[in-house]
Length: 378
Image 1 (tube, rainbow, N blue to C red):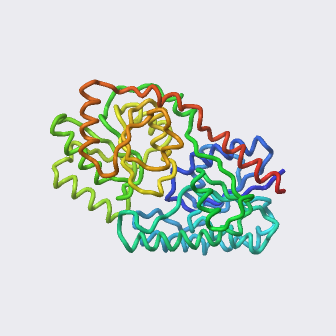
Image 2: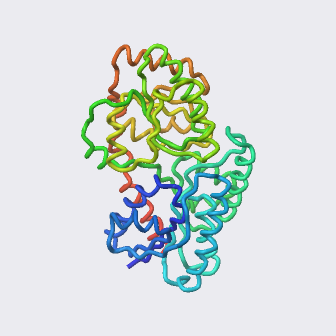
Image 3: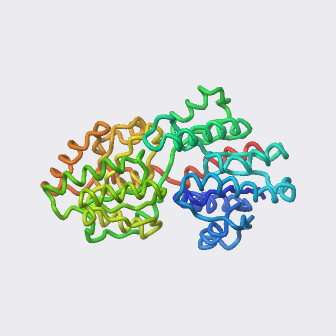
């Protein structure tokens, strides 16, 4: 039996947990004993799916929407997690980080330093550019933390990258290519299939962080333009953001008198999320970040059959090769709005090419790649 510890200290990254559930299901079939380092909130989440998992619980954690307070919260969680190091340093064959952000890298780095026999696996799902849109201090701190996590990742035995570009980034930074495995990314195929088609409720939908890099203010501009032709146009938003960005975003909506046109739904997961996807006519995803590496929410919507409107980013070229998405120059909100208006005039709300992608990106396939990679090192 292989003892696997999954590091899930970062309970702000709720969307990652769906993929972790799929991994656990596959690894348990392969006779892995799973333990999870997480918060009380994380224990409640995973207990909905599994009864035979061991939890290493970090207490006194809290969910925060402030980026500055999240830095201190993350450091606190890792400090509290140190109490498990000595007691468990020889208990696990594999430690698996569900992301390579710094707060999910510190604990496995220390464990690997103390016990070099443990196999450390991590996922690199994006890089952090210094010049992305947003608060300059936050961007600088995020970039510094990213660089620190990259230094720590040199101790990892296996690093899974979700794109060839990310693998190339690590090779360019002198990582050993033999440690790097491209997995791609995936969506929950079963949930999409299980969700029945819904009656239309929203004209458009966005899923993601309410963050400047995700193009949220561009989306406000698009809605403002579309509203002039389609007064009842409604954009639903699934997701949250830090308090300062949320305040700025809400003020922009209020200033442009779009409170009835932009509907904030908060965080939604599982069947509820996919029901909202299938009750929307189109998907709007105007991320302008050069670090965008896949866009799971975008693929979920496209595979569900929604026409999607996106900016031209390098990551999409490896995924959407047959006009599954409508691509526009970054910042060209006028062209996006015009295309959306034409879509509604022609009532073209089915993405046949997008539906063909359903089944191509499976979490089970990725879980197998990851299992095979750490199994051969044991």
